Image 1: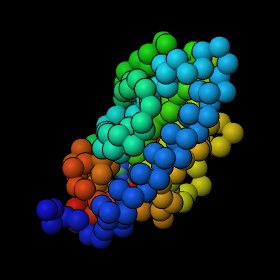
Image 2: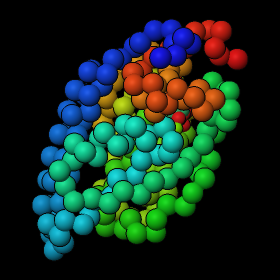
Image 3: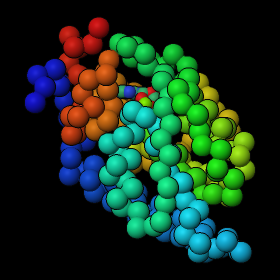
Length: 194
Ligand code: IMP
Ligand code: MG
């Protein structure tokens, strides 16, 4: 599909299977939290899923269809890799979070946990609103020493795959805006980067 693709790290069947597993464990944890929630328990209107655009659009779309729960979707846009950069230039929020997260069970969804700045920033903004629970679910987690610590919020409670420190594209992840529609997680040939 794209001659610039070098190597497929994770194929579509493997991704699909793991997304089903993540969905099942997230759904069962959310159900337990909702049922344990006292007065409002079971009102079915307490789960808010926040996919971080644009990277999480493919993963988020697949993941929510594995959650047989009543939920609301709230998109948030964050940019950290302007243009052709291969490393984070610091996360910047490009859209407001809804002001309605108090008392909700919030799940932040992203494509990848890399430096950790994105998840840490969104988690801080969510936690300011006193949600009932806040958790993060990422498809990929890079094996790097993170710029932001776990204690500062750079962590994900649900992780699809741990991957080595390589720049990857596909299944929502881009390079300079391209390759998000490539259906597998892959690396690019060196000559395509730059
Ligand atoms: P962090 O703030 O450094 O954790 O970066 C997270 C964001 O950077 C992700 O949402 C991705 O959009 C982007 N990112 C990090 N690593 C990669 C990669 O290998 N390929 C494509 N995008 C990446
Ligand atoms: Mg992103």
